[in-house]
Amino acid sequence: MTGNNILGIIYSNKYDECLSEITAPRTMGSVPFGGRYRLIDFVLSNMVNSGIEKVGVITKSNYQSLMDHLGTGKPWDLSRKTEGMFILPPFSYGGSGDYTGRLEMLRGISGFISRSTEDYILFSDCNNVMNLDVDALMDFHAENNADISIVCKTGKMPALENTMVLELDGASRVTRIAIDPEVSGEVTYSLNVILMKRSLLQRLLNEAISMRHESFERDLLQGSTAKLRVFGYKLDGFARTIDSLVSYFNVSMALLDPKNCSELFNPDRPVYTKVRDDMPAIYGLGSSAKNSLVANGCIIDGEVENSVLFRGVRVEKGAVVKNSILMQGSFVASGSTLNYVITDKSVAITPNKTLSGAENYPVFVGKEIVI
Image (cartoon, rainbow, N blue to C red; front, side, top):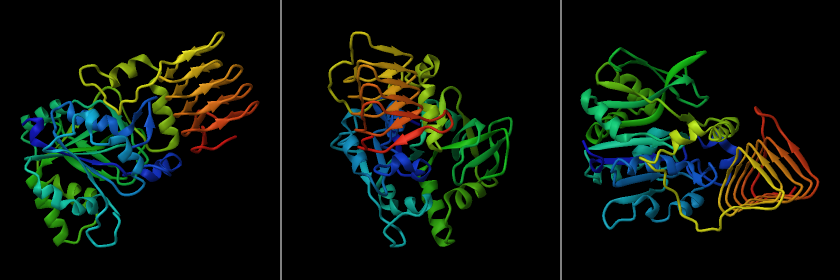
């Protein structure tokens, strides 16, 4: 199995509601992350680093920002005369004009899937921040003669709808799938990255349509463990699932640990994004920046500590920013203090204001708001 024999499918809108503050004007895939990236950059880079040449991005709503970011797919080498990137807009199988679940999304793009020639198909959501070695996943799938391989991780179960908790035997074969179980402590849960043969998916979809099934997880995967070879590919290293504003904040702050940062931004598997030429960050006389990610185009004249600053952020002299995430074009005026704050794009904090949240309750300021 090789990457160019795999069709990539990305759900760009899945779980938008869990991050509703940030996804109000955009999709989950286009949520800014890490100073200069969007969440879809990680899954796209995972795919193209393994040689996948055809990727379909399923959209649902609020996808103008996503289309602006993706463009023709050139940053990921997906701007091609043949294959490349395909934006798949909403087309409800039932005619309602909108998707209601993962299974209906797949029904809506069944024509795209059937016209593709790749033997395998790899699905992924956009709310996972990880650097997945898809080549290793392909080897695992082939070595186990698997029908379905599900990428999974051991840890606290995310608070997401239809989360699959897997029970594995000593050979990593899935013996049982529990969906949204009431559990405490660590479990092995699915990251919703799934590899299978395209022909198998088409057969399962046809069965689902004939049986009037509604859930991909419950009706297609949960019942497959007894009749198909389903395996769980355990992912080690830095891999985080975003299921709320708090988890978005915590995952972003985790990048301030050099170990996590080096695992995520592995030079052997680069993370690509839309290129924007800008001047380097400027640090004024008397400014202070400690343990922070500061993108190009920022102007720092004040104090920044334990924070993530996106492109074009300006912190005036006398302003203090701690434990915060400031998205592109944000401005903090002299005399203002921010602590545990997330600002969306182009937010302006006028002089002598104080905004303070907590580690488990960061303050969020919406796009283009002036305080």
